[in-house]
Image 1 (cartoon, helix red, strand yellow):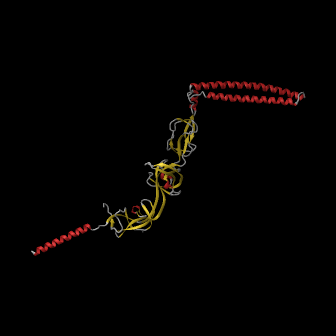
Image 2 (cartoon, one colour; image 1 turned 180 degrees about the vertical axis):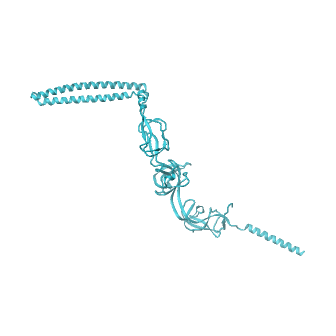
Image 3 (cartoon, rainbow, N blue to C red; image 1 turned 45 degrees about the vertical axis):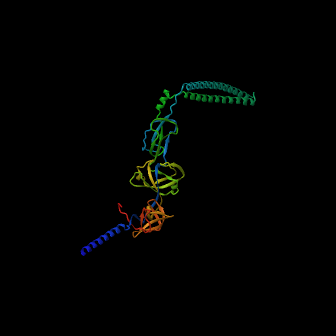
Length: 409
C-alpha cells in the first residue's frame, strides 16, 4: 500500500514538472523575427528619372513658296531625300477665281476705259511727232540763216530749245502709250476666269514648280498629302536626319532642374531596345513653363536637352517623337558605404538605425549622405559588414532580441 502511494506521488510530481516546463517554454520570451540587411561598400548613383521625347535637332519644314495649287505629294514618311536633288512636291499657279456678273461688267468697263486711254495716248503721240517735225524744220532754217549772218545767236538758241522740247514731248507720249498698253493688259487679265478654256489649257500644259529637299535625311511627316490649293507659307512636310541629328528633350520639375548641369551623364532606358543607351546633358533651358500633370496638379517644368553618346548603330530603330525614360545622374560614387534606405528612421532630429549585435537590436545614430530611395550613403555611425533591421516596426526597441525572418513567417 505504501509502495502504491509512493509511485502515485512520483507520477504526480513528474506530471507537474512536465506541465511546468511546458508552460515555461510556451511563455518564455522568443526573439522577434525581422528582415535584415547589411552595410556594404559598392557603387552608388543618385538619378533624376523623367520621361522624355526624341526629336531631330534641325528639322526642316517644307512650305509653299507661293500661293497656288499643290499637286498630290508622292513621298511617304521614312523616304530618304538628298538636299537639292530630290523633288518632294510640285505646285502650279493659282487658278483665277470665278467672276460674278457685277465684277465681270466692271472689268469690261475698265477694259473699255483703258482702250480709250490708249487711243488718246496715240493721238498725243501723233501731235508730238508733228510738233517735233515742225520744230526741226524751223531749226534747220535758222541754221542756214545764222551761217549767212541774217539772224542772231539768240534766235538760233531759241529754235534749238523748241526742237528739244518737242523731242521730249514725243518721248513722253511714247512712254504714255506703253503705260496705257500695260493698263489695258491688266484690265483684260481681270476678265480671266478659272473656267476660261485658253487659261485651262495653258495651266494643264505646265509641268509645275518643283520643290526640292532642303536637307539630306528622311521624310518625318507629311502634313498635306492630297492635291489642294494652298496659301503661301503653308507647311507641306517635315524633313530631318534621324541618324545623326537625333536628341532627347526631358521635361524636368524646376526643383529637379536646379540639380542638373550640362555634362551630367544620362542613362536612357525603356526605349524599346534590349540594353540601355548612354547620353549626356547638353543644356538646361533657363526658362520654365507651367504644365498640368495627369492628376490636374499645376507644375513648373524646365526642358533639358540630352545628346546620345553611343554610336548611331545602337539606336537605328529610334525615330522622331519616340518616348524614352531618362535617368540623369546627379551624383555617383564607386566605393560608397551604403545601406538599404528602408532601414532608416527618424530619432528626434537625427537619422537612426537598429544594428543587430549578437542577436540584440542596438539603436545607433547615423549621418546620412546621398539617398536614391533604394540605398542610402552612410558618412558615419556604421561600419562595413554591420547587420541592420529593415522596415523597423514601432515595437522594436534597443535591447530587443531579434532573429532573421524566414520565408513564410
